[in-house]
Length: 165
Image 1 (cartoon, one colour):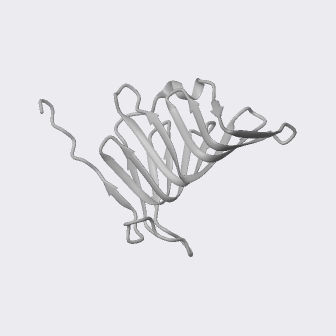
Image 2 (cartoon, one colour):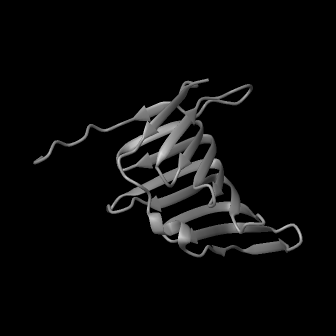
C-alpha cells in the first residue's frame, strides 16, 4: 500500500459550502423517515461551483442538516473552482463520496484528481475541499491497481513558476 499526502497552494471556493444543493436526475425515490434519497440516470449535483455527475447518487441527510452524497458511475466525476483563481480541481472515480459537512471528497477505484496541471492518481483518494489536501492510497487486499499505475500512487507536480516568468 502506497500512501502520500500532497498539500496544494490555494483553497477551494469557500462560498460553495454555504450554497444550496441542486440535484437533477431521470428518477428519484425518497424515504423521509430515514432521510435518504436515491437519484438514478444522468445525475447532476451542483452546489456553487461544485459539479458532481454520476449514474446513481444516494443522498443521506443527518440530524444536523449535513449531506452525504455517494455517487456511482463509470466514472463518476467531481469538479470545483479554486478560490481566487481561474483554475479548477477535477476528480473522478468509480465511486465518489461527498460529505458537505466535513468538506471531504473520497474517490474510490481508479481515482484521479487534477488541479491545474498537477495530477494525483491512486486506488483511493481523500480530498479536503476546505484546506485542499490529498491523501492517496494504492490498492489494498484484493483490490485491482489503478489503470497504468503498476499498483502504486502516482503524483505529478509541475514546477512553480518564478516571479516575472
